[in-house]
Image (tube, rainbow, N blue to C red; front, top):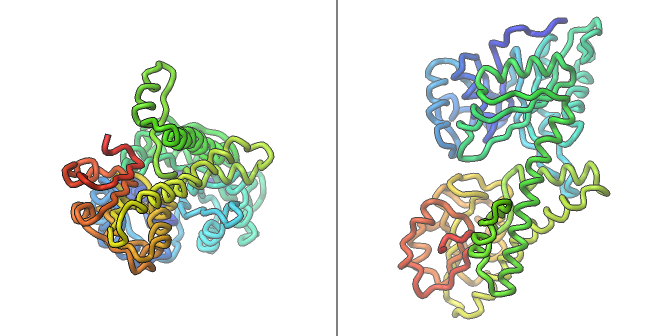
Length: 419
């Protein structure tokens, strides 16, 4: 069967930090979009034109698309000309990819297929996952084929990884270049045609496995560079050197651009994707593995540093933990080292009060709610009532904090905010 030549309807499977912005952008560019999610509360929020998480400008796009009738949401997968799968791909305890969400999405899509549809996997995936997704669909629907020369109706499958920064998603979805890897050249061309509806950047075509690796390599490159900065911060601390001053001076070299250290690495991309490469080539991925280990170890180093600071304080002294998100000015707590540090400190010192200041969330994550000595507190109040202030995220609100509030307090600044 020939491909769907003119895509007018798209089903986006997964309405999270990537799926919902993608659905909104497609809808505001004239396509009929149905977002699918297993979370009924998310579906209800989208159908009201609301956004269930923080992302600048997304609310305007969603509200506009819903009011115009171009965007709706459902817990059931419909038929559509094209499907974009944007579900989570976490790693297992063994640090290999958990593809169960992708397979679940395939089970929802398979009964709707007629042949000729375009199916795009946007979820960050280990090499070979897109083909596994496609072959699983054929297992579920043996009356269909991935071979365009077959007598059976054909499915066209591609991989197009997202490459956006939280807090700038609505800008970068449109302006960034895209990589599209098709199981076949025809599938790649079809996917390119769909993304061209809104993408102002260049769209680069390749095969599916190269596209999968490109995203992993991008984030592994960043992880390696962050690991250098984090290791440098630990070395500098041992030697009594101000790492922020050190990096500032070193970066005056015309070919040096050292990143800023932090309490670790979080988020669903940089903290996860390198392990997919390590899992695919464990003997060869030595540098990538080492960088991941350095960044995974940094939260423990921060906990030890705070523990030493607490030794100088009376038992009744309270601790302010400033920031929980994995980066500044968002509410995303996925894989956040700040959450890990806060939970570890609360567990290490069960009789001390921990005042958590995170201006972008209204409730603590489950890992912290289980501690009776932890509470979510306004930023200024948390600082005023605490003897130790641990800065883990450089939100704008933290940068603008009145420095007079920090006088006389022990400050552990993992982000260089005080400088």
